[in-house]
Length: 274
Image (cartoon, rainbow, N blue to C red; front, side, top):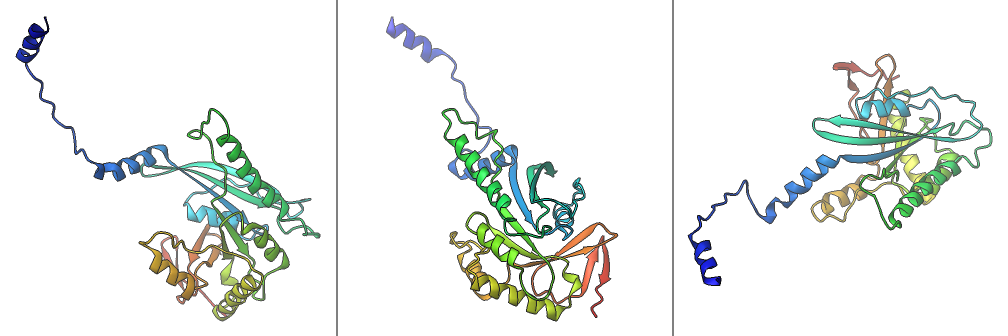
């Protein structure tokens, strides 16, 4: 019986299978990219700064989108965290963006505890993610990770030094989130004053032990260039924002920008410096 079965099987017409594409482990990066694009990305930004300093304008410019924002009042009893999530798409890439605004930050007479709602919010997001991981049946694929990826800290362009509130808040946050200082409304002071202001800020941050974002050096491919940027250009983490009222736009500039001609809505505009 067994011999008959073998004869029948050997006489059957054998199928020839053709590959639909390349097969090999060198295609793994392409598969990871395809999987990431399909799932989309999540990015959470924490914006810390006084009311009216230009946080919403910067977010609109960064993502080329007019986000719906309620005008905040200067008469808040305390600091209120207002997270808002948006679904954005650029080409075939989906992004779930969460912008967390600190409503009422710096508006109170007594500012001693202004940083606490911010710290509590960050800690709550860590705790929520940990509780989700500790579940027997985890659903991290559909779970919205609210942990903050970056903190944009807006500094008022006083031209003198950092406020005590800024130093205390950044010191409380530097161990929990990546901090990028941003000098807001940089067109309100001259270039020489701006240069001195940035040096003064960096000196105060170092003397107070505030850790701001450093370019990563773990990857050997970028270790050399990032190390040189961290050491030689210690102020490269600073950015300047110039809000142009009437155009509903804002321009980001790297530090120590020497050009006084800017592009606004496709037109070149020269900055007037007194």
